[in-house]
Length: 337
Image (cartoon, rainbow, N blue to C red; front, side):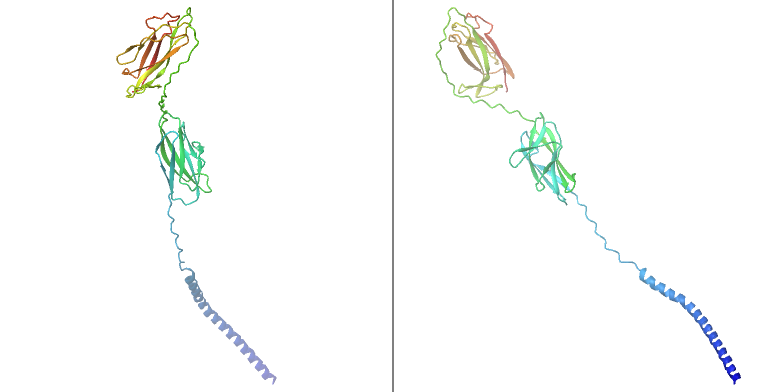
């Protein structure tokens, strides 16, 4: 009985050993099959990963290129040539503007030329040359008044600058030339003669029979006499070719002595083409201190811009005088054609 039991135990151990060996063999065989299969598995995974990440992404949309905006300021003048004290208008247009900002006016320095701008009240605001003068952002023109002391035509360049908001320098500018004419001296207006009057005043001057006579001459001026009215008006440069007036001189003869003079006359050498000499008629006696004013007009002025008239009182020395040296005077007459 015991022997059978031992046999059964030995057989069981033998079967267990074979079972273990079988399991080991199966494991080894399975490992070999698994090793063969593993590369294919990893190969399939690699293929799957490649199919996901290697494909090209959709390109982004391209932003269209923005066009380049060109700005410019164009200027215009109401008058291209102006005179002293003249007011004119400077206007401008701004193309391509893309931002808010302010406009300024400036002009290049020319000695003797300056500008001002009238305010709403009409008072002028001086503008210094070479400096920026701020303008209202919404306006497109400015009124300017020019002052000039230059004795010749003066070219001046005017500028309008645009300064964008937030900046302190101009981004775009415009320029235009202006000619300032030399100042013209105002013509001397003709003097309108009034109505002549003659008034005689009684005097209490008494002639000294033992006294002396002294006739003197004094030039008053040059002018013209109207042919129709005979009125004289002073003029520094009378015209040689006037049809309505004659060239004239005006002078005074006075007795500065203490004794009444006898009758007397005067002689005038005139600057005419014929060098005429005029001898007056006998003139009334002059009491001490009395005087008489003469206006002598003539035609045919010498063919020159100037001539000399000379006048002599008592040229023949009929009057006995205390002084004969004050009886002669000359006057240069400057004329225009």
